[in-house]
Length: 262
Image (cartoon, rainbow, N blue to C red):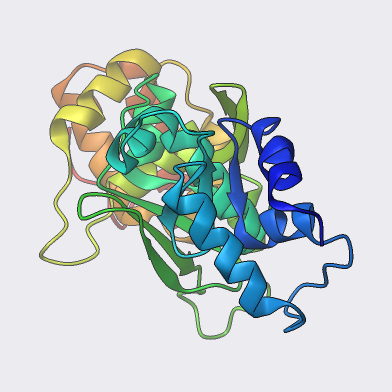
């Protein structure tokens, strides 16, 4: 294991980065093996010393901000580096097999990159909650098929309706326009209401740019109630182009069974 001064020097070259305890461990232990108990007591002593000197600042268990002795508070780190922290936690937890959707996806598609109190990351294997602070949580949810007879993983099907976007030079996968709007019009329980303001803001921008074929493919999977709501919103706001799309989808897929008069 290298001496403490060399550890500090190596970490100084990674200033402002977000590193896991294992990545820090590998810096000062050339023989590092993840989950190994070798040298574990001395490792934690060094971690404690680095924290005491404000060279590293804990963000959450086993995740650290490389500070290099600058005066900065942990809550400021979350505010300033939220997207970098989110990307790091997602990558360490589910690699690239995930996407963000629903309200946060709508906001991102409207170029709103504000920090959400809660952000949901859908994936195939991990159900857990990561608490960054009292105000900030990241929820990992396994996407489960709503059809008992469904053999193909629904995550795989819906992932086709996602896109990669860049925020602060970080790549994140979110639901596309069609999946985002349909899912935001879905009422899952009494606690979750439709965000009418955000939906209308989104449709003001994108009502002419939603693909009928993509909407139809999604409706075939799940979203007949949502597309019917989308049709009603289109009537109320004179989104004639989108109204025609919705009407056509309902007619083709359900033979008018959900159709109401305009």
